[in-house]
Length: 121
Image (cartoon, rainbow, N blue to C red; front, side):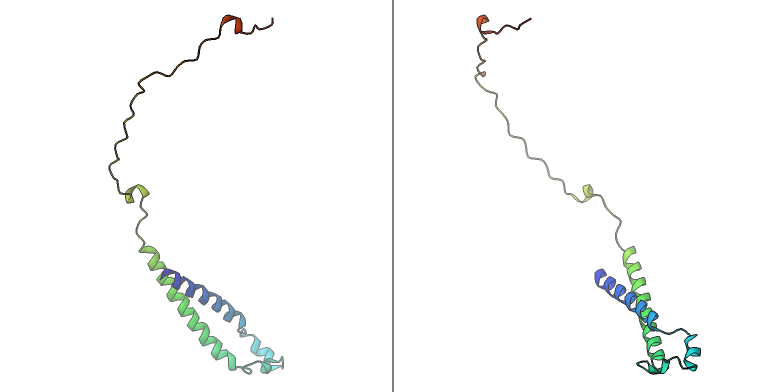
């Protein structure tokens, strides 16, 4: 749900930016009076103004509504909990007992005095 609203919000923002950039400023009417070519637009000299204004108002309303909805959804998220609070504790299984060896391990015989190499001085 939150992801869908976020997608609509981003699309409304992009559409709103595009529509605002498409519209002519109020000062462009003076230039049209002197023949700057405003009558050669797709909707005529003033035909697009009403359509673009209404579409901008609609997208602005959608953007405002999705902003409020996302803000409400963000505050409803429960407080973050620690991982240790969510883990269920189970009693540990007893460790297997290890029996000591019955016979000690054989030790290697000590080298005979004649086999010990002498260190040169």
